[in-house]
Length: 131
Image 1 (spheres, one colour):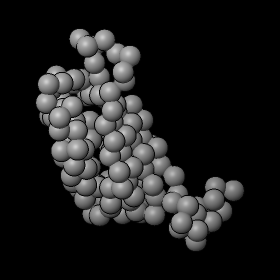
Image 2: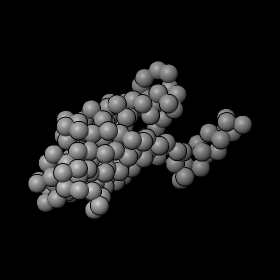
Image 3: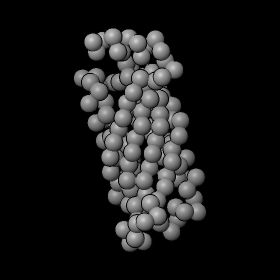
């Protein structure tokens, strides 16, 4: 099992709606990420979605920052090759497309993967293959 952390930025074209409905937007993004995990891995779970707006941004240039934490089984990745770079790119592309449908302007900045710390057996085998 792997943990996945995604950082994205979205335009604030719905800035009149989002401050009042931030939790609803987080739930919607959680559902979208769940669909990405289902499509690419056949399963997975979304642990947390956070949306925040930097307070120093001028109103006309306001952006929303999105942070997503999820879990996935890297071995179930449906695309080939099953390299980490290809996996990250696929998650970024799928999630970016869905976020642009919602916000019109969105970019996935970073996708980070790491062996889940509670999955000690798989973590040890992962590090032994690296050496």
